[in-house]
Image (cartoon, rainbow, N blue to C red; front, side, top):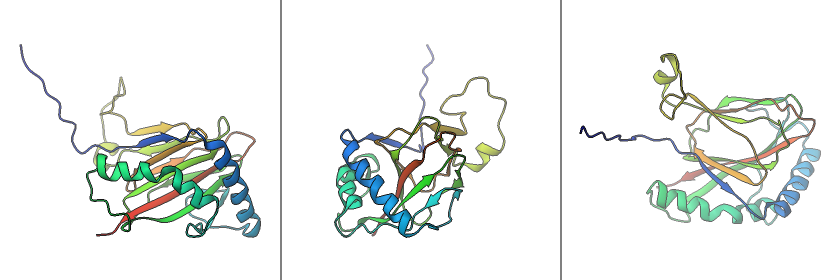
Length: 201
């Protein structure tokens, strides 16, 4: 009998966590985000097509963002050490930016990545039904540009992968991975917090 082995090399992981006790922190984050929006209604223009993009949070002082960080800091350490095998030093693995995006009805985010850092994340504070999936794109350009007709999508043939947002879910992924957000088709706001992690040598 012929023996077959498959080596999955150069994998691109997306880590999904669910914060069980998310309702209280999400309520605090929602109020914090709308307070920021009231003070700075114009916000920033980055990947958002419509909607509102905040400036970076103040994560040094006490408040909902700092409280939120304590919810996932152990997840980050596990990804860095157990999954990637990178050297972890607490003072060198840093969140270098954290911000919020509020997508109104019909607003969306164009495809983009997050350069000059190693890991990025999306955390769902408010995610009504049909508010827009996050889409991740094949990072190997040549594979995505030209490929045969697909009869059955597998992990080797897919060029786009969708994740439906769910309140309390946290996605952490390589910062080089291009991603976009579909249009919010609900009548409620979609609220996400994103952040970047850099690791200094």
